[in-house]
Image (cartoon, rainbow, N blue to C red; front, side, top):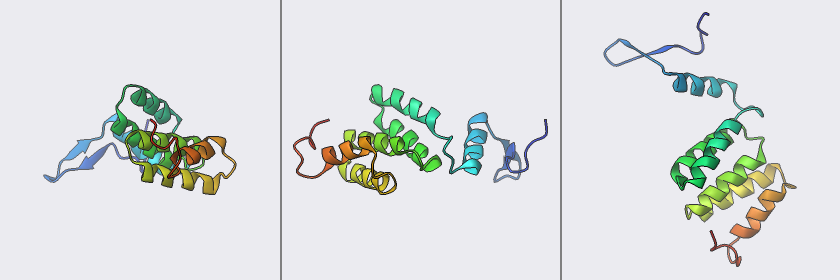
Length: 128
């Protein structure tokens, strides 16, 4: 099978030799070329849910940010990212994600619930 011209199998290094890309790097480059797409991000969301359940909040945040970047059409990704940021104590960033999601999807129930939870002065804003 011939390599795609837009997905090189190797990248130049400082010494002039080429370094082979591993499969994860090739997958990320392919995602980058396909975005934004309503079909991307769901596998990363599942990984993020697994990481959240194990308390790896920073890793989960990274996966969820990639989900939102790859597929800005899915409001659930913004809600999950907001929840992760809330668990990390980054309520300001979480509120930004919720507002960005509601700007595009004003009727999304999960985002509306997150807005109520994160609103300053809310009795639920301190709970995790």
